[in-house]
Length: 299
Image (tube, rainbow, N blue to C red; front, side, top):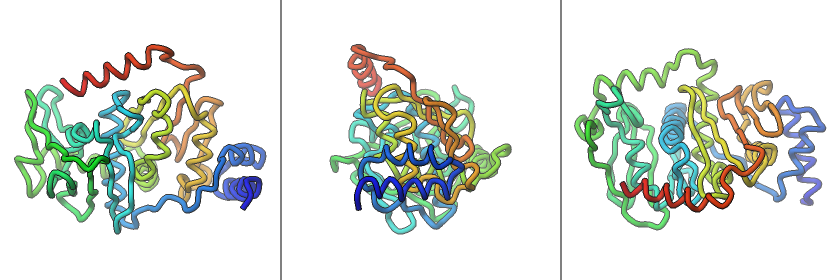
């Protein structure tokens, strides 16, 4: 299939499934330069999607702009595995991914950090991170096949995943209920679907971090995930490739995407927010920033 025919086919799909007008849909479709094949594969289990969404949300909140080697959430590859997913973690970030995800009570913070109810089993080269109250789980390995080190407690921390291996602590139960209910979020199904897809499409999410080796991701509340970057793909180019992979499929058409400006877009009614700065923020200092991030991992 020719490039122009691919673009026309994608543009028609975007018009059907999003509120984009024909001219805008065509402009975005022309920015997808290769045929992309099948769309993202979702888990059919809503509990699995909710766990994956929670994992993506926690990693975005935890890493912010501290990535290495262009892995936005510390994930290199994602491969569907039955109803679950197998994640190959960026080797230099793998230990820190585990630290961010496994729940601990932080006395200085005054609450639970990590994914409430997440527990671990398996061996150091392939770990199963599973929900203590359901069958939802993800498998994680290091991209280089090396061992992953389980985190130890830091000052002021209690490792809940270790202290209560077979169930949830009271604090975790409250956190888990808040994620499940999340008052004020209009459509939890859309949140879980799109954040799960961010986790399952690392090759696309990582495009924002590739130019410098890091980008910036964060959250405002339990219902969104923000990605900010300055070089590489434009917002429209990233939206185009995400939509080509079915990122907004099964989202209510009117809420699928809103192009705010040349530098900003909202997907799923502000569930995923993409912001690109108009010029490079780092210039020649980018390598110094990378070295600073590396030093932070050693501390």
